[in-house]
Length: 174
Image 1 (cartoon, rainbow, N blue to C red):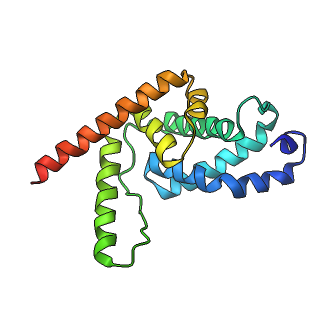
Image 2: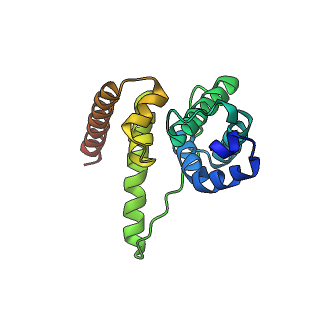
């Protein structure tokens, strides 16, 4: 990123190749809309180039990039004044060969995503960034403006809430 900030814009293609899947995956999980995730992913990398001079190397590039991702998503929803997210469902692909196993995995993923969507947005975001995007707590805490210990407490409580939602939903199924 230092080269891009220094004016070598063509190097941004390498960053796009390396990080676009992570950005898209995060935006898809948060918004549950493929087209929106694609559009916002493109916007993120346009902003990355536009605001390249704000990158100073004090925090990791991934944390800096996800600050842009998060702000782009928030700005989009503020502009559109979405009160709830689109109900189109994210497709989860499975590598299992057996159709029954794929169906079971898909059902479990649907239940997990439905439970995750019932959490407050901040808790949902923490879990998506830490568990799905594999970001470090130090990066997420810098991104969200929290201390690392406060973030760990929120993550722990969010996991506990998610577990309770899933357990309660299972009770009602049987």
